[in-house]
Amino acid sequence: MKNPIKRIIILGCLVLTIKGISQEHHHDHLEKVAQKTSHPVSDVSFVIAENEIIFFEEEGFDKKPENRTLIQPILGLRIFDNKLTFATRATFEFLSAPHEAHNNHHSEADTQIERIDGFADLGLMSLFSTKHGHEGFIWGLGYSATFPTASKPELGTGKYQLGPAASLFYLGEAYGTGIKSINIGAFIAHEWSYAGDKHREETSLSSIQYVLMYRLTHTMQIGMEPKVTIDWKEDPGNRLNLPIGLGIGDVFNMGKIPIQWRVEGQYFLESSQLEKEKFAVVFTLEPILSSLLN
Image (cartoon, rainbow, N blue to C red; front, side, top):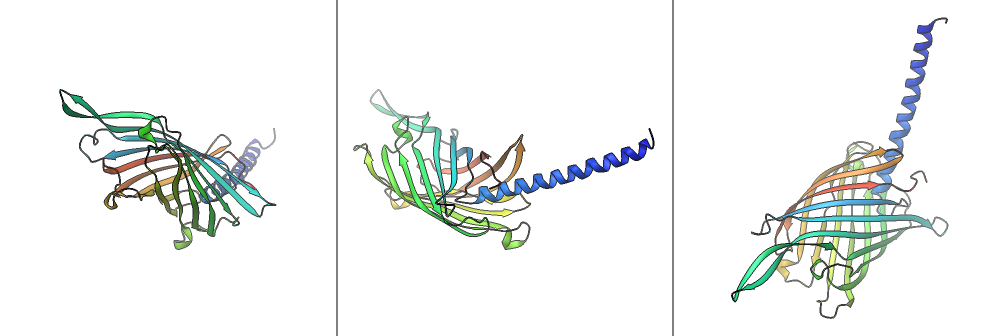
């Protein structure tokens, strides 16, 4: 064999070149994942799997945190000759929540904190948009609905609810360059009850999930995306649920499937719950199911 060392060097250079091209393509692909999943009305289909642990400050509840496990499949597609984007997301939620149980013992009220497990009401939000790009101002209009599917009365409203929904976002076009690295916006919805259990109270509920993210790299983001709720049927001092947060997320590949992950801590400036929500920890995984190269 002539010049074996020379051949090894040439082969090594070739391998490194191919690896570099592959990694560049890999980074470009994951960057596209991060861009499309940040889009409020994207044509991408993926699943959000989220687990939230909520801690309370009210005595008795402070030792029994609530656990919410949420599965949210999101279907995005283009319709009417690609002139319109339609995105719909269903919300399946399993709750494990502390609850006051009142028992009579020797004619005296005896209150205990018990845990209730089961499924919550089913949520559905659908948005339409004519904006296909992944930078700049992007809006969406549609509706939000809730169906009384809770497995136990304490875990749902017992009402069918429906109302308008909208999204307005500014998505940055670069990373690490000041204002152009920021993704900011909100999903806004309001629902009224229109049918359901006549013995349950009517509902009027607003929700605002606001997003403020800074792109650290092609794929990594830092910021917050908590959900504010306002229950207009409650007393004025007990309507608002207002968390703020700070978290970090990135994208990685598991085989051929890109997965976006996030972890975020949230602190409640105001709590609408009698148990007084104090802070929460949210873990999120988002497997991307559809092609991101469209």
